[in-house]
Image (cartoon, rainbow, N blue to C red; front, side):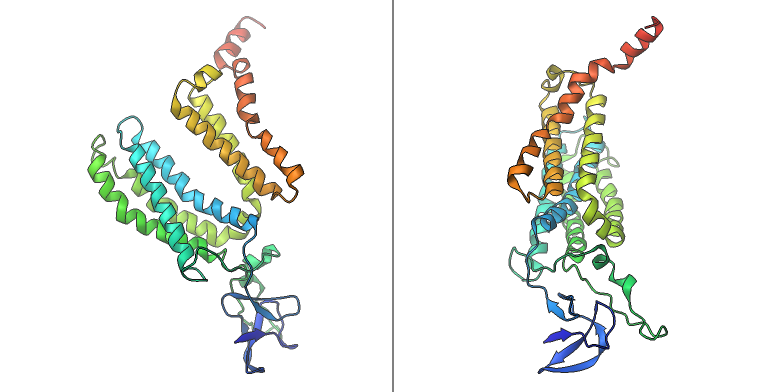
Length: 307
């Protein structure tokens, strides 16, 4: 079965079904997994996601994992030694959800994705482009023109939530003995808040995130690194290497910096783009070299002396 656009079928996302080389039915939405080309013929999505598409999916997959780790660390702190096990469990939950989502996506049973090419921002919001041929009757042609980049993220979030509810409560109940009965489940309660928020964010702003996520990664990673180093009172290389946890946080931010740079450059020209990765340690080095000049006590003392 294929779907085609007739000459009287307005709108890029509307089509008609062709059965046995004859057009059947009225103009309408193309089936899921297909989208209209420039000749107004709906073609089946047989391509594979580009590098940028995979990086987008990776960013959307990292969001719940990073939030899991943040709230686990926030509510555990120094009260319990169970934080590490909860971090590992959160990683397992998100990894399992990603694998199951890929296996259930077309082609079913394979760790691969069949996709349509993203050509413009309007591809993410086909519901806003329903045509009105006579300015009276509206043809509802809402479809996933960016198949499957829109729905695969929502399915992934659903599986993340399911796996979390299956695994995390049992783990926390057994090993989080250092926390009170109300505190030990707070990281789970937090997830019950941020998963609906992430779902709405994807449903409403998926297209905007698709084009903006590289810059979001760079800005947030820079801000969070500066806040962490400031809160931890890291002002020299000696302070930085004093604890292994600080090095883990630093390397994690470096990975995010590299991820953002690769997403922006898309590695179209390796000879020009790969040297940009040398900029990854730049913000941390700049902070360490200038921290002693911006130390608040020093500024206040110099101001009191009239300097």
